Length: 157
Image 1: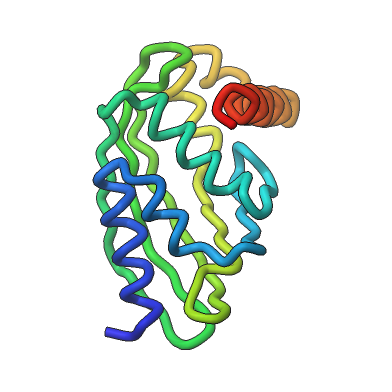
Image 2 (image 1 turned 60 degrees about the vertical axis):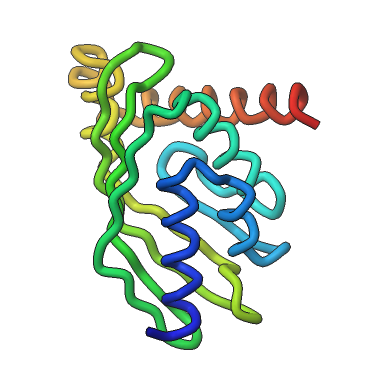
């Protein structure tokens, strides 16, 4: 197992244990994160996002990871998050393909890819099915996520 694979195992083991602080230890201070919901986050905002998501799950988050691969510079993993979406109380099972870049033994770039329409159908039901594929709905999901992160940061500093 490479050192960067060990970093990814540490990251996802911490995630599965709802340990955002240990997850944060795996990130470079200049980390850049991107996914379909939050868009681009940088630096401390990445760790704050994970803390917020873990807190909002209220211990009912299940993380399963597989296919961890990494060399000296890049890595990948597939992971599944199962949880109840707090805004609608609906069950979500999200399958995510993650890609990483490493610098100084830490994650400097983290990209999570998943089907936002599939996610929105689970999270919002009929509304997600009908509108989850539209740019308008994607924008609204993104705006709400960023707003939630901002409020979380303001109340947890």
